[in-house]
Amino acid sequence: MKEISANEKMAFLIKKAEELCSRNELCEYDVIQKLTAWKCSGSEVDEVLKHLRENGFVDNARYSKSYAIGKNHQLKWGRTKISYQLRMKRIDQRDINEGLWFINEEEYLEQLCRMAGQKWRSLHDADRYTREGKLTVYLQGKGYEPYAIKHAIEKLDSGEE
Picture 1 (cartoon, rainbow, N blue to C red):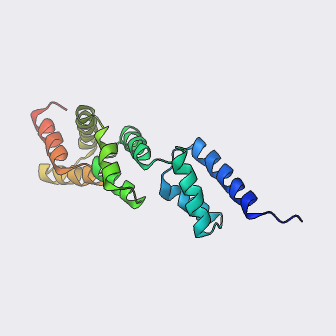
Picture 2 (tube, helix red, strand yellow; picture 1 turned 90 degrees about the vertical axis):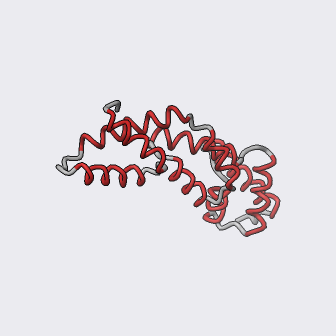
Picture 3 (cartoon, helix red, strand yellow; picture 1 turned 180 degrees about the vertical axis):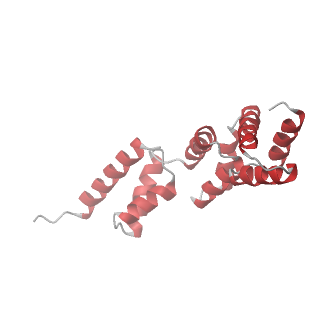
């Protein structure tokens, strides 16, 4: 079997990483995890990551924006949960804030109110305070902030849903 040189190995790793990043939007943390799973050394990881950054394959700010918009629209997550998940991927707070900025506030609150109304109708507790408590816990679990939850409950109280 032919022995491959360090340059050939690096070229192969870069090509494979570029293909991976072309298929999916990835953050630096995801790329590091993948390269580590491929049994790359620390210097190889650094070199591949540097190449990907310089050539626009990896951009944490861009990733943060697409992640925030996607999770909010598809999974109906609130900003708190999105922010927490991005921090778990070691994204800089400035990039997280920039990504969250792209979530339209009006749509965000309308979506929350619709979701709160659906959940409210599914709760069958006789006691209003118990229902409100369960609704609050549910919405907090989805990652919505206290001000937004209060807004949704006030809309339910006024019958606007």
